[in-house]
Structure formats: structure tokens, C-alpha cells
Image (cartoon, rainbow, N blue to C red; front, side, top):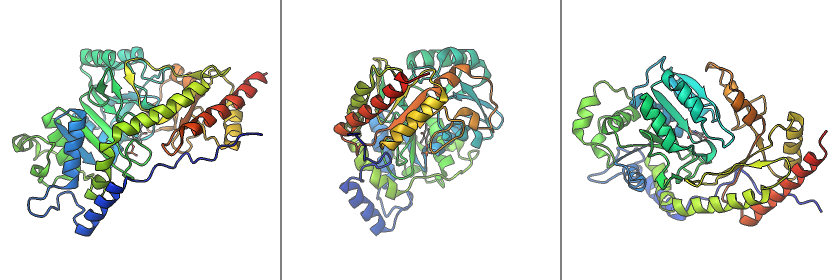
Length: 398
Ligand SMILES: *Cc1c(COP(=O)(O)O)cnc(C)c1O
């Protein structure tokens, strides 16, 4: 009998009951705007920021409307101007180059390695082209952050981290998002905490945070923040920082606070699922799993593997045969952007230089989501199906 998988790759878990209760309380109060507080009430958003900063071990955190907004705001807060070049990963998703383009700045793509991390040799070669790197920890793969920071510090490049896929992950025991100057996170439904839309920006730089708060639309009510610098810092920036509204509201913050409290357990549950699929795929003829460095504590909310040098037709056949058995694989080699999968050459607003290493990796790169609604048994089933279909296609090659 042919096994068919029945789970939904886009189904996340429900919001915790406590979050639903807290959201109802916010709605009953009518005070959804973060600065709409009664008396000396502290808003849900301010509390969430305080809790997130404490969790990440940094003094400052700002909750905003999306991960993309967090990145654009971080770039503005570190001084990126229209026309400036910003280094970034060739392998990432559209909100990353989009954040750069939203400032009228210009992405400069850096190659990716077979470990799916930024190619640090290519970064070193291009570091003199820009003052800022928007580093995307795409699909949760963290590059050698020690070497990356050495390269960037040596070249005077400010690092902004896109941690949309590494919320809760670490490099050598240090939270992802705290190595660079600013860390950006998303709480959009498919990330590690779910408020539909939302994001965070964290930093240790008081002036950058003051600028980010004013940019996000603080209406000069910055004293109501609990994870922001003192008023003297705002005095220095408030007259020349524009308001580009992108605040988070109390409803979303209420939903997120209980999720933050259980983030570590959730991350462990993802990584257990990842380990089952990884073990099931390891050693499949023709496929290559991504080996993870020991310094990395990753969060396995999705898994990637390579079908190196497979012709496009065989990869398309693998995707189709897996789909027929209920297994949704995304292929990064497809010529047209589909769903959440897009390639650097689809972002035609950015100049494209040849990236042969990235092209070879993307041509064989397959990607699968692992929502927490999948059980460990489900994960074993997924790996069995992929292994059987890939094995059959690889054996029948030529
Ligand atoms: C989702 C995502 C973001 C942020 O996205 P928003 O939808 O704006 O919250 C940033 N980078 C990557 C790689 C993402 O997948």
C-alpha cells in the first residue's frame, strides 16, 4: 500500500487560551492603541517589549507591525540613505531585499554556500561596497558569526540581522539577533510566534532605539515605553526623525505574551521534528542533508535538503510525486517565484551580477515546512515518502 500524508503544511497551532483571554480583555477595554492607556496603566505592547528585551538579554526592544517593517526601520535607524548600497544574502525571501528597496537603497547580493549560509569569502570580497549588511539567517541556518563579525568590524560594516527564522536559536550559546547591531524578528503566522502580523527590533544602541521608536510612530509618547532609553536620548533625535507609522497594537501583544513565555519549549518541539525528518533522509541516494555546525542551536521549523546536480526535470518529478502523496516540497530552482519561494533574479528592481555558487545551490535546493501540528510519527512518514520517491527517481536516472 502506498502511504499518503494527510497533514496540512500551513496549519499552525491555536493561540494559547491565556492569549485568547488577554485579547478579549483588550477588546472589552476598547484600548487597542498602544498609547491609549487609562491612568497609570501599562500597555500590553510595552510589557511585551520589556519581556522580549529581558529574554534576549538586551536593554532595548520595540514591537512593530511586521518583520519587514522592523528591517526597514533598523536600516533607517543605523543611517542608511536613499541610493546607499546594502549587502545582503542572495538566498533569502522577498521581504529582505524589499526592506532595502523601501528606503530607496540598493541591495548587493552576497553568495550562499552549500550549508545555506552567507558565503563569508564573498562577503569579505564585497565588504568595501557598503556600510551596512542586512544578514538573513534564512531558514534558520546561521553562518560562522564569529568570523562574520570579524570581517564586518574590520571593514566598518554595521550588521543588521534578519532573525525571522531564528527566533529562539543561538550561536555559541548567544541568542541570534544579539551578535550584530540590531536584530529583527517577525511574528507573522508562519514564524515562531504567531500574531498574524507583527515584528520586533532589538539593540543595545540607545540612539538607534530612540530613532526606531520615533520612526515607528510614537507621537512623542516615548516615555510610556519600558524597553527604550531615557528622554535625554529622545531629545537628541526627535526633531529630525520622521514618523513612519508601524506600531504594534495591544491585541497582538496580548496574543504574543503567553507565546513568548513558552517559546523555548516550542523551539525544542520543532527541533525534535526536524531531527526525525533529518535522520529519515540521511543517506538517501542522490540527496544531501545540510550538516549543521556544533556552535549552532537551531530551531527546526522547516527543513532543507539538496539534490545536487539533478536535472530540473527530475526535481520537478520529485516535487510532483511527493505532492501526489501529500508531501509539499518547495523548489528554489524554479524559474518563476511561487508562493513564499522566490529567487534573487526575480527581484528585478535590484541589480543582478552573476552568482554561480548560489545558482548551483538553488538549482538543487528543496524546502519543507514543519508546523507543530505535525507529530513525530508524521515526520517519520514525511521522510519515508521523500526517501522512497527520491530513491526511485535516482535509481531510474538516465
Ligand atoms: C517572513 C520573513 C521576514 C519578515 O516578514 P514579514 O512578513 O514582514 O513579517 C523576513 N525575512 C524572512 C527570511 C522571512 O521569511
